[in-house]
Amino acid sequence: MDKKLSIINKFKKANYSSYPFPFFTIENPFDDEIYFKLEKDYKLFISFFKEQNEYKKNNIRLQISAIDFFNNPIFKNSIWHDFILYHCSREFFLDIIEIFYEDILKIYPNIIKTIEKKKDSKNFLGLRNDGKNDEFDFVADCQPGINTPVKSKSTVRDSHIDNAVELIAGLFYLRDDKDFSKGGNLEIMKKIKEKPTLFYKKAEVYNTQNLEVYKSINYKKNNVVFFLNTIDSIHRITPRENCDIPRNLTNIIFETYSIKEKLFKINYKKNWNILGGIRKKIDSLLTKE
Image 1 (cartoon, rainbow, N blue to C red):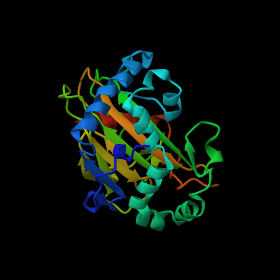
Image 2 (image 1 turned 90 degrees about the horizontal axis):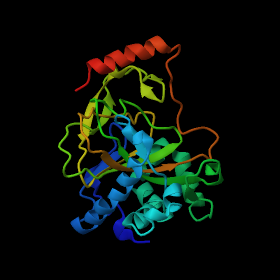
Image 3 (image 1 turned 90 degrees about the vertical axis):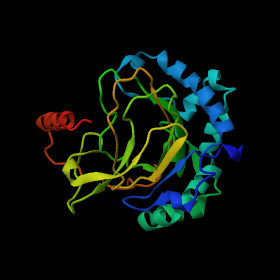
Image 4 (image 1 turned 180 degrees about the vertical axis):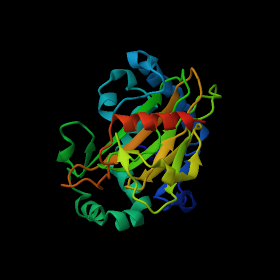
């Protein structure tokens, strides 16, 4: 595997922050030569997604898993074959763990114990695959994807946390040079009140009035962000204005299904119902950019 394709080769300690939750960003992680190849071959994914009926839907996420990618011959000769292979590898996983090591040790000490004890075992890391994820200590996925063109200004997802089986997540942006739309940025959120965060639906934050933006990470070409997934790892995507060009992004994730309990417990709001959903929808419309 070719380590020159590692998205964290240019990582520096100055890129990293433990507050409000552990994350780091790298602008221009790849030199022009490699990025040009990645960008050029990304057209294969866009063509692939355009053939799906869901491509016609407004601003939704479409992506292909590593498992499905490797089983599809149209991608075989793409630079993305080596890219995905490397970013689902044990070598890359241990490199990214090293970056987050101190924070993982504080937040998830048992995860560090598992890594140090089992990192050389054959079942340490596998590709994420429904029905087989619990056969490994950790599973990896690298998912090239898009957000479909925007016909009506909207956000893909408001303030939320990711699935509680997810340990680390990364997003790599490949913005089209012809995309001049506003929005689509990732915002790192922090709590401004010492009150419990309540969630509803798919781990969306209910009491968003307790949050404010800590840092905005622009949706732009050759830009990457990684974060450690915790109960406080709240983030959102800013509304994107009308645009007939998809938003191009690749998701890199590492999950664990081997522990009896998930990494954290999500505090869902009790008695949340359809009326609450309508109220949140109205609030969302009123607060759009």
